[in-house]
Image (tube, rainbow, N blue to C red; front, side):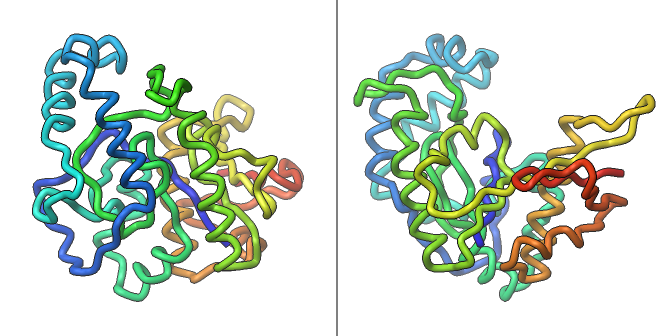
Length: 254
């Protein structure tokens, strides 16, 4: 069983992870080619392309100018500890044990606009690139076309190693679109988190992100490798709702 999550826009490269172990991203060469494409844009171009402020565009431009392959370890950080944001605050990687991290390294994957797919201990350099960014790569397509075959093949490889072959999708729609579900070797289960508001259950963006992080942590801490066991998820008042769920979409409400 493999669980996938989205990355985050916010990064922390100021603090150290305190974890000595690391691995290298699978698709560093593809990432390097993408960096060369992005380096053709000026800060002004990036501001428009990424719909960000001039300050963020300038920071992003500088990150890509400094990006190296091969990289300096001092300028890189393990992915699980570099990403910030609601999902990662709930996952709280800093409080995981060595055994937890070892399990996560086998069973958790992070989708990325620049790196394609990452293991928790894969070293990354600072970047900003959402999967939905409307950029045409040197290969002629968008980021979905660029990454989908590689991401899907990597997931299939990992599912084969760490069976049963079930993919738990805790990624956002934007990132999950990069997975070619028709070519996956296993089944896909997407947990959905709903809040009871104004007389009905509904998905609330920020709360759903936090819940996805909590579930990723739950899977890691409980060493879950059989999908049915995630139905026991009860963090922060959530519980599995069988009546609202389908075979591929499992709903948790509170």
